Length: 197
Ligand SMILES: C[S@@+](CC[C@H](N)C(=O)[O-])C[C@H]1O[C@@H](n2cnc3c(N)ncnc32)[C@H](O)[C@@H]1O
Image 1: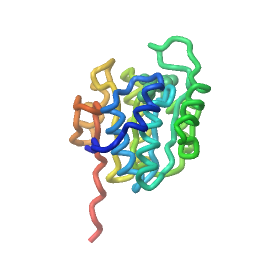
Image 2: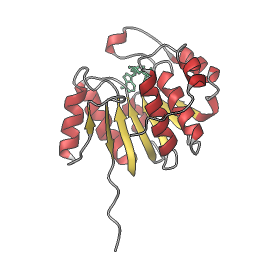
Image 3: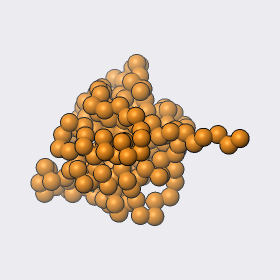
């Protein structure tokens, strides 16, 4: 898993002013994955909040092949956030970070956005509603849209029942995920298709 060494002082300066739930180490990991995976397809994020993780992903993609980052969030928060609307702040932060042209916001739930979604995904980052049924559904809805060899990863493995949903999904698909690791909490590489003879 990519956790790049390099000068991140510029991105640190931007992201430390953005309210969110991501550490710098996690941000660097997302940067590395987006840089690598933007050669394979779109970067898709489920759960953007005010854009902290989106900025790390977009900066990474920009350092790679410049694939668009699709940022999916209804911007009305998860149950633990109470009544919020984060859309304006999200837009302001993305613009302030200079990645507006790289980011396509979809102001819908994961379920709403998955309907009719076109495009192949190189990196899927799941950080939406962390309740079991939602994580389970995110994995189910988006799995087929990730290209073989692409990455799925997510945050807050040890919170709520995220781990239960990820372990069940991986077992059903006979996948070998990295679980509860640091700096990003879980990740799966989608197997390549067998080569045709
Ligand atoms: C923990 S926050 C995301 C934090 C963000 N990734 C960051 O690093 O700052 C969870 C986000 O998921 C969003 N959310 C809740 N339910 C969702 C759903 N069904 N589909 C997509 N996003 C959802 C919330 O609006 C909230 O902004």
